[in-house]
Picture 1: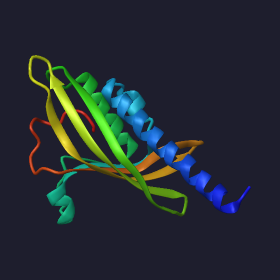
Picture 2: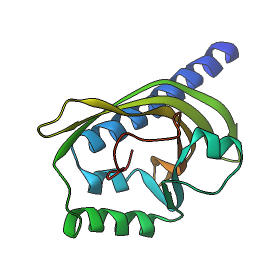
Picture 3: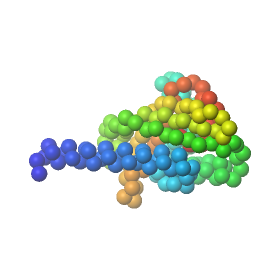
Length: 165
């Protein structure tokens, strides 16, 4: 096979795999399957949800900061076992998935995200718009997020952030 065509085909396949990872991630959250959501992260991971302003100013304050999969598990248990909140439904729209760089077996990518939230007995509203900055690794033959940072565009969110995004 032509080496240029082979390289292009590899790039298309990798883009498809990263897009599929994002699609499956969104589906897990939209279906409220937080155990499946956990499976998208490597054991040593970082997950943050931070305002654009704080991110650009390199301020450490984030709405959510977990620096291990164990911390993510704790959050899921808290959501399932002890937190009281109104039932809600989320819809994640992820677009513009782009691989920025591949270095030392880490895929650096980004994507746009828009999340609509419907709380029972309320109108649907936009919960969050922003972007993901990701570091993706292959672990046990699966693509996983080593780091996922969600940078939301607004300074304020319309409601409390109960679920992961």
